[in-house]
Every structure is written in structure tokens, then in C-alpha cells.
Image (cartoon, rainbow, N blue to C red; front, side):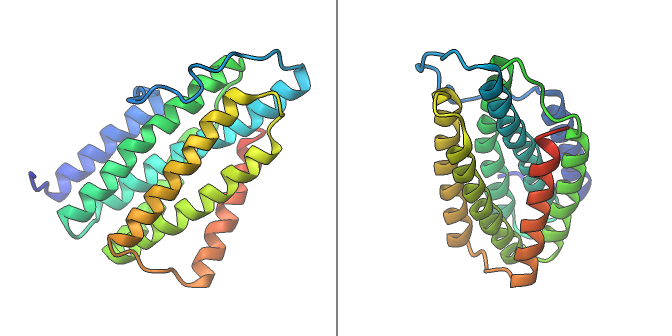
Length: 211
């Protein structure tokens, strides 16, 4: 494993930002909805599904930024590689959500650069606090994301099985990433921090659904 210096980490993070925001990342795994036939959603159901998938796409933009920011200031190469590997796995989520938005004739959030910048700054803060805090931040993030995905599954139009298949796979992956972060040494974050994370996530969900 090659040890990267701080300037190299910054350059790598900048490259990752450009790739994420430009949509250059393609999925490694096929979409979970690939074999599910499309159903004829009416206009109301299509708008509802598009809003939810736009939120999930924005969340995955933020996830890429969060992992990238934390990796810049990771103390150990082991932790850094753990963060980058989780980010690579979640690139599938980003691509799947974009594909589904295209299928729904809907656009991603117009505020993608803002979501990325804000999450990257949070990632830097978490990374600066040390590897155990950084991994704990990932574990709590994944717990909250898994919870909101289950909420979205309950709110999706019943006929939209293609979106549901994506969200079900994403929820399973988020649970796995949270577990591995805890097993890697992540600590439980203080309640005020967890509350602030919940508020931040709610802001993203409310705004990205519309803009």
C-alpha cells in the first residue's frame, strides 16, 4: 500500500470531487432494478418517486464528499483505505440513483456542489478529530441514512418497484458500512453531535426534494 503525503491526498480529493460532480463514476455492480419491468406511473406518482430519488442522489453526493474529506486527514493508512473503499462501494448507489432519475425523466438536485462542499468540510472536521471519531462519524451517518431510506421505502408509490429495489439494496449496504466502521474502532458520538447530524440530514432531504 503506497503511503500518500498530504499534498497528494488533496489532489486525489480534488480529482474525486470533479469525478463525482461530473457524473463520471459508473456502477461496478448492475442496478438492483435491472430485471424489474417498468410500470406506468401516473404524473403524481412519478413526481413523488422523482423527489425521493433526487434526495437519495443528493445524499450519495454528500456521502462521497464525506468519505473523501475524512480520508484526507486520516491518521493511519488502514483507516484511510477503509474510508476510500467504502466510498468506492457507495459509488454504485450514486450511479443507480442517477440512472433511476433518468428513467423518471427527472433531474438531480441543482445544489449538488453545495452538498458536496458542505459534506467535505464535515469530513475534514471528523478526520481532524482522529480515526476513532472519524469511523464513529461514519457509523452514525450510515445508521441515520439507513433509517431515512426505510422511511423513503414506506413513502414510495406502491407501483414503483424499480426505485424500491435500489433503496432496499442501498439500505443493506449502509448497514454493512456502519457495522464495519464500528468494528474498525469507531466510537459512539456524543448525543449533541448526533442531533446536529440529524438536523443537517433533514435540511438536505427537505431542500433536495424541491431544488
